[in-house]
Image (cartoon, rainbow, N blue to C red):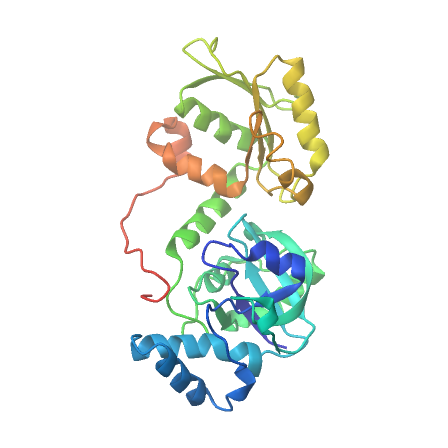
Length: 344
């Protein structure tokens, strides 16, 4: 069995279709040829050079390496890793069908394999940092094999998707040619920050971070003491005394698991009890589909923050945060090149 990294668009624009259709699509636009007609990689490379003559040879080689596997190397029974761009989660599936080329599917869905997505919405923080590093390769398709990745992912499945590593691996192997050496440094940095936060601020400590962010945004807050919170963790309103509008009720969940619709309904009820104008539902583990579907219905009343949102808001307002919080989450701003996938 091999372990494959597969991406659903640079912004996750195909992710929901991948999951709903139970497939992986090779979303290369205008690739209107059955890949089984190429018997050798060099044949595919020559085709790409002819079809896109303005591309540099290096780009054509890069594309060849990513296009070739879906028809010639992936096997039924192999596992697929699909990092989500829509939430801080990883989806894992098993290939259950052979390569299919079907022009009726429309561009860019001509090439696909059927997949059983047997594990979805696994929090990124459940994975060791070296695995997340491999998942951060810029390539759309590549085989993941460093640091016994396949064995460790299988062990995680048996352990309810928790890592069995007692000591995180930080000495990354970089000799395997199946994984790209260019990685999403921004995502890697966020993963490191996320692991630090959940290690130091699990439980009621997460409420402390959210309150600090709101205060940095100019809100006056009241934080419920640890223990019974009557359905609200933070009350917030603008102004020096907190008498302004909007009045906000905040519920914070720091568990790894995505939360379901009843938690959202509870917050809406609490908003009425406290005469709040709006609500903020914060869930480190993200939200189930039942909550996502309510986003348009509650657009003018409730906002949802998942792990990505928390870190984005933390970074946006870091300079204004309480000094105690900054001491516990010491960050340093750096500049780096933002290369595209083709340039990396």
